[in-house]
Image (cartoon, rainbow, N blue to C red; front, side, top):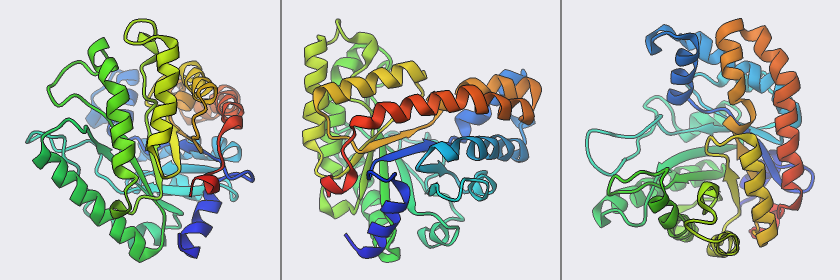
Amino acid sequence: MSEGKANHLKALADSRGVIAAAAMDQRGSLLKAVASARGVNKTDISAEMMSEFKTAVSKVLTPHASAILLDPEYGLPAAAARDPKCGLLLAYELSGYDNTRPGRLPDLLENVSVRRIKAWGANAVKVLLYYSPFDAAHVNDVKHAFIERVGAECAAEDIPFFLEFVGYDPAGGDEKGIEFARLKPRVVMQSMEEFSKAQYGVDVLKVEVPVNLKFVGQAYSRAEALGYFKQASDAASKPFIYLSAGVDNDVFIEQLEMAAEAGSRFSGVLCGRATWKEGIPVYAKSGVRALEDWLSTEGVKNIQKVNQAVGSATPYPAML
């Protein structure tokens, strides 16, 4: 790893070399959630409101995080409001995916480049990719080339590349159901193995846990679930961190405890909605001051619980 990338990674981690980061790059999903909580249409939620929410989260929670992930569309004021000791990741991808054709193909923000992300003060670039190793070969070929291009751009600008991949069923099955729960370990493991390859230029993998806790005891035994955590960990030859994937904070803590029990060599977390999502109705009904009050109590409690759960994480330098 170059000295420049190494210095940026250090800025994203705590003193142990563990990445204990908050995630606040949600755009489409946050807009829908705020609109629903207010009982209005999405078009009634302004860019200023989105930025206001993100800034409150950043201001209150970043003193308790080693880094925060934001987006350039609404998150630059929040980046400026973060704690001075907190590192910054910025998202590069367009929210969602191309739904005009099969394969959940990704795209990048049109007015953003890695050079601009670096100029905005970021320590890393993050891209989210919907990915299944079981999709058609021509679909995954497009996605592989897409990630290779981003990796090369990050290498040219000497800034770390964090790749987040979210699994799905190419056949259109229920991704919250038991059949996908049975498939999920292989989706996560094979994705981690694929994007650990040098050709992609990825520095840190941001991954889902390999099981659905709801179906432990049905899709797999607890012992099998622990085994999947370990197998997925062994499949990665790059540092990796877990994403919370929108689950409740208590569920995310349980996932991290299982990872630790299984001997997973995860290097931290990028935890978003599990920490702050219950503040959405507070903001929608009572405004930003009420949100800040909620974050200062319940939000801080949530992030501190996550910080305690990453105590067993493996410092990222040990995975390089």
